[in-house]
Image 1 (tube, rainbow, N blue to C red):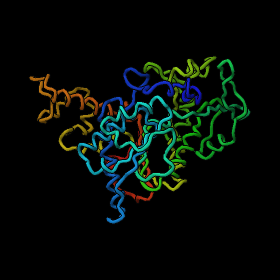
Image 2 (image 1 turned 120 degrees about the vertical axis):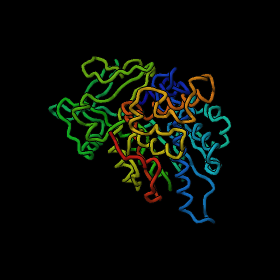
Image 3 (image 1 turned 45 degrees about the vertical axis):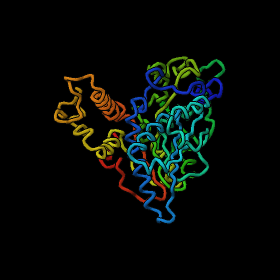
Image 4 (image 1 turned 90 degrees about the vertical axis):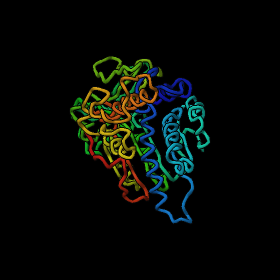
Length: 392
């Protein structure tokens, strides 16, 4: 998985500046449009204010490290900074942007993607800054880190390896850390269960926590708590490959599972174990401030945008499959059917469609989870956690 995704010459992510979107292999919240970054900026600006208040006026930092891990070509940071430049000048001026990306091709495209906001870019590299104070964002990073796959047999735990003919074989686990991981999470696998263990995600979380001097870490990804991830529901594993927006999930009966087909040509991913990620963060001194569906995180941020999305956050409206939403009939921001060519009206309809995609349960809204940590910041009441703290 490491070679297939990250080999400098042949790896899936190494050979292109962007892999997601309509022309790519999978779809993320960033691909919906700039709205995701615009909403996330609200939370980041509030975090900046929180950090400012913790310091005396004469010692108040004039800069904030904004670190994006797994940044790709920088689209999310570009959306965040453009929103900040429009409505939060103090936050924008304070940002020192650090883009962390393994792909050299993606890094080479970052300045062009940032455009006018490129002056905020302080560093771009393959590793996290050695030390930083501010906010770290990891949006759909942990699910793409290489995993170990194990299977429980009557004689005990076995690890799945790949032989020279690209076929899976089972043998003794490569490290006792795999069994220790399951024990730490309170997981007991039944014979025949096949699961993935992401030691790299735990290592990444611990490393990030150590490098953060003070501030916040926001992890956005899909996955489950350990008790659900390692249960009969997912007893075939979650290792999946994506190509041209088509997924090929676990198939333990196949001589060559789908994730072994066309290495370097397709995405490979597995669900995140949030229980272990959270435990790793807390073991390094971070405090968990929130864990919730993306739906509720974004709804908590919508209120600060006023009437632009009037009534749209109401659950009854979210369930309405029809757009424009009839409950917004009195809103001045609604597209005017009599004048559909009006650019402002089209933009509003496009924004409402994007919002629905981001927050609708059953789609990105419920599959994506938001895990927020703080270090040296106390327990602030964050806007992103103000609507409902719920994980489905």
